[in-house]
Length: 97
Image (cartoon, rainbow, N blue to C red; front, side):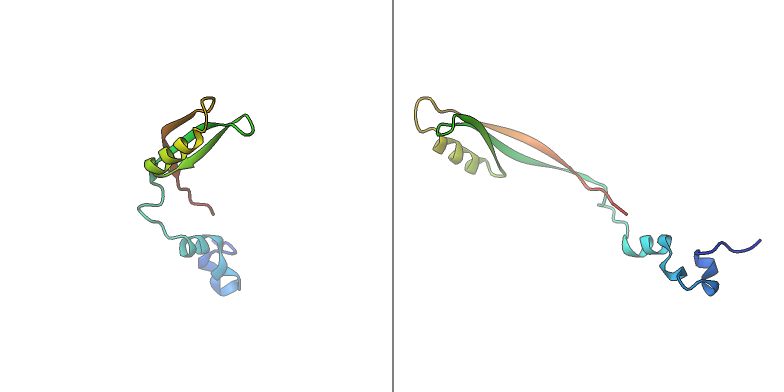
């Protein structure tokens, strides 16, 4: 049975064998135990009425106190409103080849 071209076993007959896709993937992308773990972060979304434009807008914050300060600053008159929501954001890491 002959050797398959472009495989590590056929390196003596093929100059490009060291650059075989399988070899590159193993060398360039080591597997980590944390590589495919999902992580959850907490964000605070402030939804508010922009009194200058009449549009509802949203800003995102990582800190509750910053979100509350921002929401309070949007309350300029009795027509204005702002809501702070705590949101769990899922981040998924994926390995790409």
